[in-house]
Image (cartoon, rainbow, N blue to C red; front, side, top):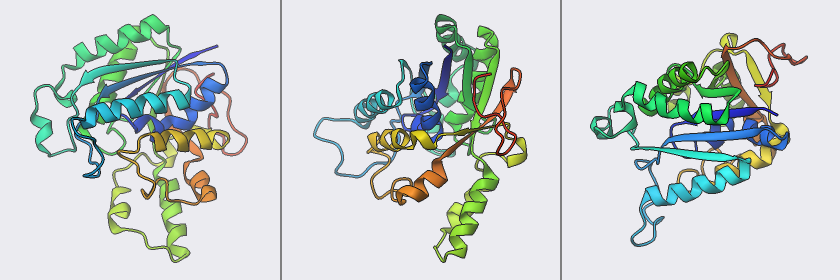
Length: 266
């Protein structure tokens, strides 16, 4: 059995971007390791969410524990950096935020976990952090260097299929569903074009676990959020594939459907 390590920036990223893959690996008897760089302290949340004396960091830590359990995570490592906030916000200037962390020092910490686990695969964000968030970009830099330090032979970039998302929005428009202009504009920076994607993991068999993990992050993903407000069949269509770019390691078996790798494991 293999060990696959995922480096994410904030609690909830693991469920949204890679939840189905993680659940499928765990169900297959593989060891899933999750490293989360920050506590997501700067996330937005409903004003009546927290009980007196509770902080968002405490709430999100509990949510991450719950999501990790749903996804079958065998080891959860919190790196303990502060959330940097979205690009251009004051949190970016905090000397203790992840975006300002020394890349070599952070990578050495991640590499130590990869070494302890003898990780066969490490998964990090694409070069622009999927959509430009400073913590995601830093996680890419740290993860790539950590894989180098640990000698991890197989490395994937988790991303979104920009062309697939465009097709979904086009379908929504054809059906008369209003598509927010901000969502359309975001596609210019979200994920990568389909031609660059090497690997599509079909997670439709684990869509329930993915949805449950997303629901565990209730402070960030409420029941009325776009992610969870979709009908079950539409949710499965939107989230039933997870997308990766292999940047290190030999190709694995391909799917007959589209000729891409069908797994993160060779």
